[in-house]
Image 1: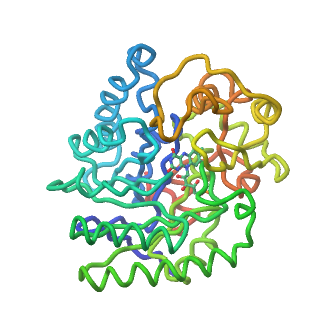
Image 2: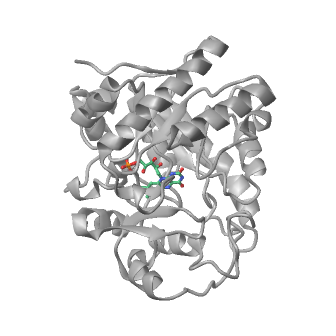
Image 3: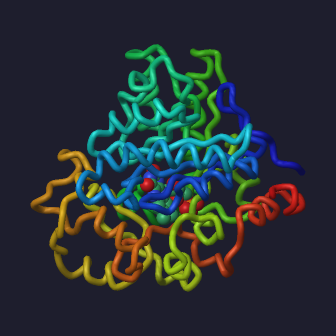
Length: 360
Ligand SMILES: Cc1cc2nc3c(=O)[nH]c(=O)nc-3n(C[C@H](O)[C@H](O)[C@H](O)COP(=O)(O)O)c2cc1C
């Protein structure tokens, strides 16, 4: 059976596959552009997006604002005429509003926002063509958010991303919940679909709901489509592609990963995160890692510089620069199922059953 398309307002992706935003430096223009070109939705991560700019160490915010434009333009060029490219912006980001406004200014097709509830997102994208999508992990969260948006802004989401406990990166669950049985999340997913349906009715518009976390195969995609999802968001599988923006040393860590290498760690953001066991996670479990330099990545509310166990920017930057073993390498719960390097067209060929040349 062929996969359905994914419609988000007036945008239609040929396949219902969104590539999850991955910061720092894992999903930039190369990966997002290639996914959009293949017929999925490509997402660039805004997390310290300008880290390769010489200006970055002196002025991270300026470098990031500049990179939003250059990365978006590069991705759109790769994507071609109908390619859909968006940004992922974490709610905990320092000066979150400026990031959203900059993405709108450069013409982003879509903004996906998680690691907190993006309560003010509608007013930040008002009068633009940019679509908005929250990332939620519970029916309660989607209920609170969509009710607030409806009351305060008389609008609703263009898309909802539901992130389950098998996802990589920060998780919207407690440490204990992070290892819940998938069937428990399936029930929650059903409740989320119901909540969203009420707003589809109220606003007389379709709100596609996509599931994220631990999706590896076509079978997994079909499973969530059958549960009522309009699509899926996949991140981990895209890391070990030629097009992924992370360096080869990072991809090699994924290729070596066994089930016992996957850990739930404490993040300064105050949420648990799923990552690969390495020298960094060993050290972080034992001691507080001193902050070398603050690059103002998180808002003060989300990061108490005096008490955090380590600096998240520093550790994520380590992992994509020289020292993946001494940095934070986020990964999803199914990372051990990846055994070889691939390409974005080859992944789309595997998931769709179409020939790889279709996606070149
Ligand atoms: C390396 C990595 C970095 C990530 N960074 C972010 C991020 O910056 N913001 C975010 O909202 N989600 C982030 N995520 C979560 C993904 O976007 C995605 O929702 C999730 O990983 C899906 O599960 P999967 O990796 O099992 O496919 C990250 C995931 C990974 C693996």
